[in-house]
Length: 96
Image 1 (spheres, helix red, strand yellow):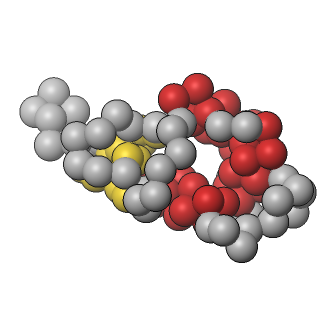
Image 2 (cartoon, one colour; image 1 turned 90 degrees about the horizontal axis):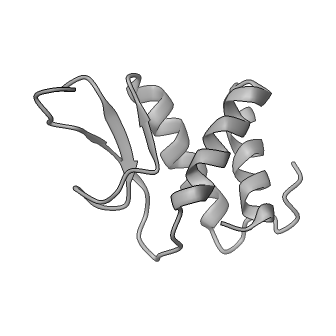
Image 3 (tube, helix red, strand yellow; image 1 turned 90 degrees about the vertical axis):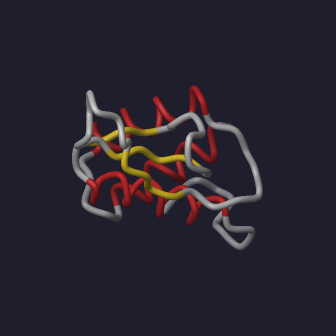
């Protein structure tokens, strides 16, 4: 993930009422494992007996998660923000 896309993700999360620190932490973590592809991001329940209450964000079921959360709403925020910043018509500057 390049710096512009990371900044756009941070702004998209802040637009969803995330704090500066939370949006920065999420974007930094996502940037370290992000791979650009054509498919959309989705939220998946883990289905893991050890952590049945966890939701993860990935493009496909059983893909590597870019973000995990106990709160489905937070995971949905991340998935929606990633889909938003990857749209071809998204602002290319990284500023809100």
